Amino acid sequence: MNNPVQAYQQIARDQQLDALALVPGSNFSRLFKKEFHVNERPLVVFIPAEGAPCAVVPNLEMSSFAAINFEGDVVDWRDQAGYQGAFDTLLKGKPFNRIGVEGQVMRVFEHHAIKQALPSCELVDAQVAIASLRLYKTDDELVAMRRAIAISEQSLSETLEQVRIGMTETQIESILVQRLLANGASGMAFSPIVAAATNSANSHAQARSDYAIKAGDALLLDFGARYQGVCADMTRTFFVEYCDDRQQSIYNTVLEANLAGLAASKPGVTAHDVDDATTAVLEASAYAERIRHKTGHGLGRDIHEDPYIMRGNKQLLEAGMVFTVEPGLYEIDDFGVRIEDDVLITESGSESLTTFSKQLQFVART
Image 1 (cartoon, helix red, strand yellow):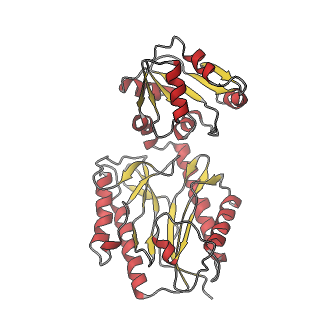
Image 2 (cartoon, helix red, strand yellow; image 1 turned 60 degrees about the vertical axis):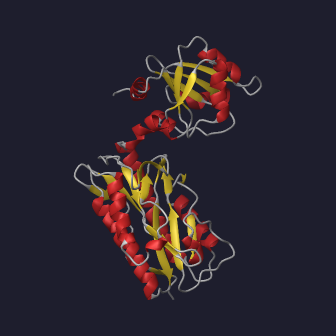
Image 3 (tube, one colour; image 1 turned 120 degrees about the horizontal axis):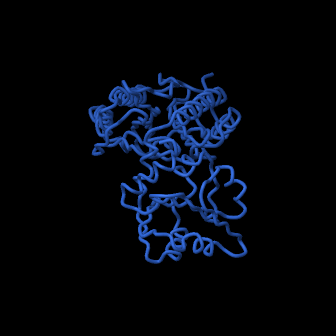
């Protein structure tokens, strides 16, 4: 389709909706190639199943909104008057009986503003259908993702060079963030996870300012740059100066599972198949009780999106999809290991977009 709005109109028709309502977020930025800040001022674009779109826009965003070359009616509003009048004016007489909204993105007050303007209209959660357009990455998105990953890997390498025994997790996190921004990231894909020793056993750990890393610690870094609205997401686990035989065995088990997941990733298999191949390695090991999560998730403009790589998900993997393969083993009050790659499904197989070495590595060696 030459006009990208047509794809959303087709979704509305397929879902038997009169229109879709988009708010700033990943679907919005993919369609209009521009990001708008989410704040207390509602900005909503309505895309009817037939005809031109229309929008309610805060007056102070009008100059930014003009940059997207929006073709359709726009009603702006100012703080002094409030936004409800703009919704009432824009939607008056519109033949919208069923509007699809982004259930994971639209806020309650935006929902209420639409309902007040159109009391008899049914608002339907069309999140899955709307987001399905993002399953297949565009060429521009893949270029941006490759750049985000390159920035991430360069920044990780530079951070590891500065890690020393006695540093806190927050000090290491600060170095990593500084390197990401210095190397060209437009922001963080998410708050980085820098976790050592027992903290590495917490899958979504927060960096501590009161723990100094010491020899023999596991050191897990899970992070990603954001570039042109697209995310990277990678995890590597290291050991400080040395590791013992048990630590090495657990690391090698996770690496074997990671490689099995990558090998299973190809067009025509399901998300279930990839998770099953990955998790089976962990289950067959002596550390099966340390399994805590599924294999991975889709990656793009959101850090977590479809397809979710988990048993029971029979969604077929197709060329253009990107997801993570990130097996891990964790034991509370002990340590954790996770190894994560970003994988692109191609016409003939798959490509690991992350290339940072997964060979067992030691940091802060004297």
